[in-house]
Image (cartoon, rainbow, N blue to C red; front, side, top):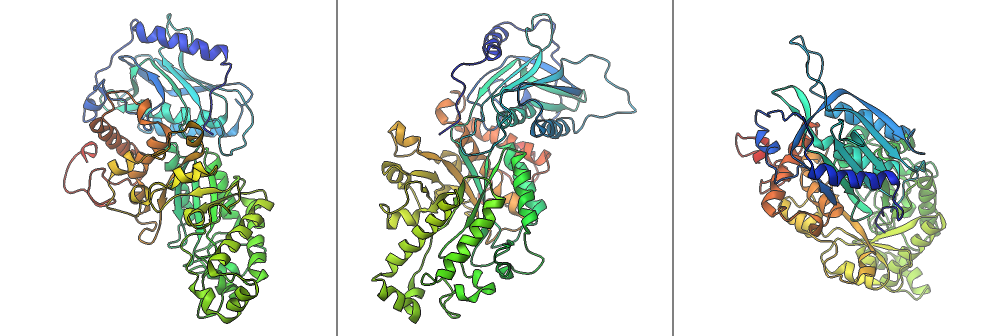
Length: 554
């Protein structure tokens, strides 16, 4: 399921490899090594640590320091070279890289620059973004001089989304030096060959328990791209509120908290478009039948009764007509092939206590457990009829594993040991063990997040491939726009590296202490980019610093 490198690599890629070996073994003649000063010196000078997050699959580096021209130009090649996605990404990253560089009345730099051009080769012009899209890339950084076969910076990727990942890595290689007031790349030359470990690397955002304006959602999506996440799981609706416009059933969003805390169809389109430009899919969720109380504010017939409001009424065709209408409207908004149907925490007492539902159960010779299965399977049929692949929380598998549609992707959350059972049955699995990857659990520290392993208990290679990845979950009972980023970051980054690069692929020097140093550095990178990331080592997530100190030591 994970992205693959081409079986027949291009001549340019082979050239990259040979050049990387040459550059790694032969120092670049006459390259300037510029002294770094200030608080970041200990970071750039430590040759044993690679300050990239997540760590690339394969890389080599040298011992030179190169200076980057603030007028860095872009040259595009390949069938996908003219992509708007790539061009806009380059401009975004150029703004990030050269944030501190500008005209100064104290004079300009007199020396030349080592890096003045970035060449980007994208082989395919196909911009469809679906599960398993090729996100691999190669990145070469070398001084342009007489020994260079290919000078300066070159990124090669099969798709625009691989190019995006390469641009992110390149941006992390660049650092501003306050002494020389230049952007520098340490440990050059670099040769990086990279691809993700898992095709699904997600973050859940719950917009039902608290409403997030679209600008906040965009900020979260932007920050996700820095850690190479590629799926926003948008838990739009729950029992507390129904904020989304559904044209087929316009009274549904009467279930929003207020008329100001809603998402129009246009808002949803905008979020999906914004995410795609950063290589991120949006997987929508409507959690049925157990989390549907807010639906009945606009359509009370969806409740079993006014005194017993969830699960949704399983006995009425109207319930499934509304569900079908929602899925049809959402199909127009969300192009991602996966759709999350929930199915967790279904307390069926309401069905057995409501007279007309109780009568329906009797007429159909069903127990409430049978009715739960009936609802989930009928919802899956509706989703599949609209060309969705259904995703369900693990309770559905735990309750009726043999009955789920073979296309079902089971979403683990209750604890360990579920994905091994799921994949053994031939289904696919998403890992989100709440003991480690639920971000609202504020007492779970960064190392617990980092050490969690989606493939625990799965040794068969074919079964491992059915674990499509994992997801950290930002439930919003105690989070809102005032603190959501502090709750997400930096712990989400720990999971991001686990999903991008396996422990086995990391260098031997990548010990726990080294990981902490790198994560503290990445947390500071986030804050420099305007992301309100909390200190790494505080016992409780999103808590304030315990006292004065460097960003890089907390």
